[in-house]
Length: 402
Image (cartoon, rainbow, N blue to C red; front, side, top):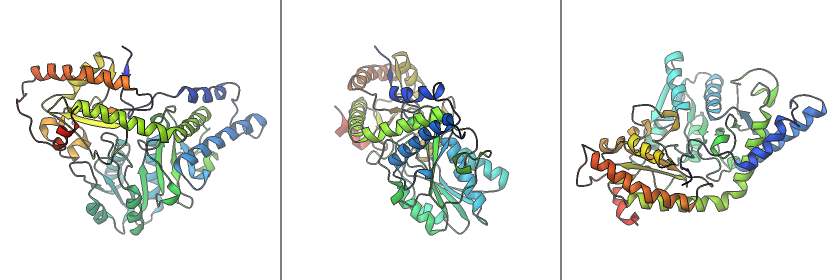
């Protein structure tokens, strides 16, 4: 049996067409994009084309609103720190309790090191933001609000266009970490009030180590990385040309295939989820009516996710406990804790995340193997109970069984 990879929210396979596009820029077209000679100008043209490809995917008004970075974490940090530097007299951040660690760790550091006040807005049992609490936290001292477009663990989508308008109503900037959303949902940033948006190449079949920050024209910005004149002096350092070209190609492929790929991926995800829920004593996490098309997070009552993953891995199936950035931690997911997932299921959540590489055979194979894995683990579980407790989304299970 060939390995089955269902951990695409952690990282995706670099598309072969992306690799092919990158290769010449390691050898034949090796010039520095900032150089004035022919070697440099040829490479600079490739960087510009990549910027335009990303502009088309994001729906930005201008290609120069794209600033290339090393990835989502750098983009997140640059956005938050710049807003604090440029909003005189404003020392507060509004964010959510379910953000990626790239936001939450920075916020925690800023509290301790600079006395910044951070408002972490909660979510309900389906992972949906408390809009009233968000509105209440915005005020005359808010420098920036930062809310993810899609949650990396549950796939739940947030109404970032509306949230941006609310932030502007308080005179604050608005940033969204869209690392999980770019290439999976349609975006048209020029029609929104979003000031800054972060993305990462390896989440959309591009290379690792490259990302971008969308910076709306006119938004005040202080560089995080200072140096030369690259990126219009918004991000110093010699351009990672192979990575930039790869990200541009990945954006081009995502834009071209979105209308066909996403419905197919959603259908595969739904079939996988129906089959897993049919096993019983498990339930889907997040807002199942408003989420990414590729993500399904299933909580198994009275089981340990680590044990499930171990057996899946032995069978050649890759999935995740949730965020790859939290793997190895003994603490339950901060996202699931914020959602008040019952203690009986808090440690039994498994995230399956699909991509355009996922096939129906992959889904069928998982559904053939997983029931036996769960049955064997339940037989060994000291806390196993005969009856299934009622939990979030459990009312959906009967109609979703095969």
